[in-house]
Length: 109
Image 1 (cartoon, rainbow, N blue to C red):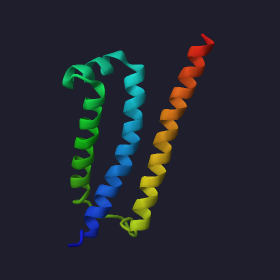
Image 2 (tube, rainbow, N blue to C red):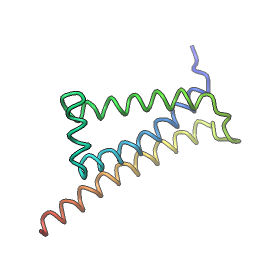
Image 3 (tube, rainbow, N blue to C red):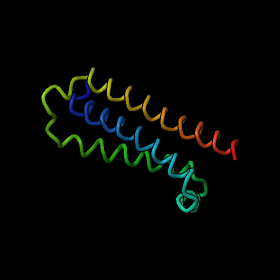
Image 4 (cartoon, rainbow, N blue to C red):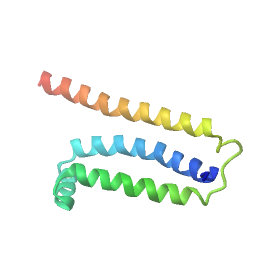
């Protein structure tokens, strides 16, 4: 059984977008106590809520992107792989950068 290319492309791009959203959500939770408290209240632990939000967003975006007409060459597997790689590296840099700067500022205070 082969997976149609439109699903590989759409869910690959969904993964790339959710990687970036994940980084933003981590920083938001760390900087806004209201968001953190709300996420804790929703499921009992903020990481459970975090995971459920990411999973729901991944599925919803992947499904919605299957209905879009891709730009020329946008659906090439190598392009999707690069998008996933770049978004993963950028997301990791945002999270690491936030904690390095927050830790440095916290130690300086």
